[in-house]
Image (cartoon, rainbow, N blue to C red):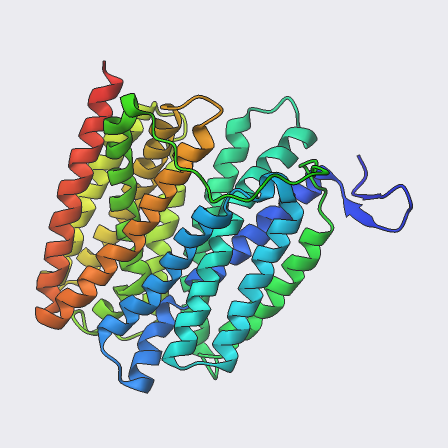
Length: 407
């Protein structure tokens, strides 16, 4: 198959399905990296404008609200509008977010930019995951579909990991740290949009579009207890990622007395990359084995994070975060697999939509609670309370999933 193909009229040029797969993967990676690039920059905004830590959590939560809204309202529209068109609109939304960061860098602008970023991420997560699977199936019809799913998950978590690292490097070593990262990613996102426009479509657009409706959330009554356990596990997993994406730099600079922007980016990068690496390393381990290992890692890691904040000890805090991140990767993968197994093919997408909505609530609500806690209590105490609550939730959820698999 050639690298490029043309339409019948010869007017349009398209990538073939195999390179198109990697174009979508690169655009997905760029978008997810952009979504976390502000992580090491929040402390700079706070120092510049003098707002309390709680405002950081509100800015971060606006992103999660955008993701949840788009998952519910538009996560499924690529099924009938087409993957390429919806992916293109999502990436252009990210470019708009980058432009707002540059044009309106005050708190209202940050809230709007993060919300739009969340909307684009929510739409692209659902669309790109499906598009990658379909492109891979056409390019390599004999390949195990799980390989595409693994690549999609690695791209997702890998992008989330590289964003803070790039942001930290730029914040530490270049002038205008609140401008240069967004300028670079604005260019990368626009290039990604050009690439997406050249990728083959994998969904046949209907002549008559179905009436629009929000994504339905289907929960089979017989499976609700197990689904709830999976959702709680996903909620706790995303809460840990939310902590390190929003407030880790604040803890590093305040409680641990390490204000380096690069260090803030490196710590968050390490937590996310551990989540991606654990999925790849233990891919051949049975699902119950992955859940058990993930539970142990998350439990040990949360204790390490809390102890590192109390002592305080940078190394213990960081190692705890990395170990917890590795556990998050395994627990979340197990939660997705468990939820998917509860429904038939006709309702699986709706069940997973419900799972992701609850997971992204975990990205926002606990972080907001920590922000309130920091306003009322010492930061170390708020961190311990957060760790204790997440420890209880993840143990209850994973043990319930494991018990169900043994029946």
